Amino acid sequence: AAGVIQSPRHLIKEKRETATLKCYPIPRHDTVYWYQQGPGQDPQFLISFYEKMQSDKGSIPDRFSAQQFSDYHSELNMSSLELGDSALYFCASSSLLGPGGEQYFGPGTRLTVT
Amino acid sequence: KQEVTQIPAALSVPEGENLVLNCSFTDSAIYNLQWFRQDPGKGLTSLLLIQSSQREQTSGRLNASLDKSSGRSTLYIAASQPGDSATYLCAGDSGGGADGLTFGKGTHLIIQP
Image (cartoon, rainbow over all chains, first blue to last red; front, side, top):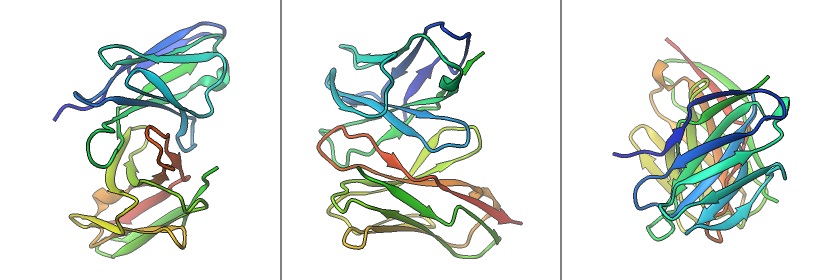
């Protein structure tokens, strides 16, 4: 079965640079979520989109922005990177039209800021 | 704001034992409750989803229950195996569509061969 695809899987950036993470949801899923998991921490919800509209907002820094495109893929844009942004970034998708709304997670993008 | 607590933080048991992982949440308006497994440095694998109208779900050797009135969920693992060693996370949302999940800090489980 198709899963959530994230790219790149690993990314190394320097402080003050920008980064763009991409997420391709499971086919026919209409909702995308972004989470950040710092070293030894639990995942923290950043933001979600339903049918290309922002739906819920968590602890996303103002330096970050995200959007969902017409093909339902999503991108997380991160600017003015800081050392503390080094983390595993997960994308998840779900279908709000189907039963459950279970969230399925991608393998994550490991971002290292030096 | 939903807060999720998991007890114990770590657990080490011999292979073959049955065990229970606990999860408590502060907001009884929780909608979906999901249990995940995470191996070191890896992604999150969804194990079980309990929807608001449900009280439990079963998958193989796993059984999860949800008691909204007491704000608790438990994950029961039967006949544990070394391959079950991982961190187990519970997470809940408050409904309303595309709400993000609030995670507990997880239980680090080690099954001794």
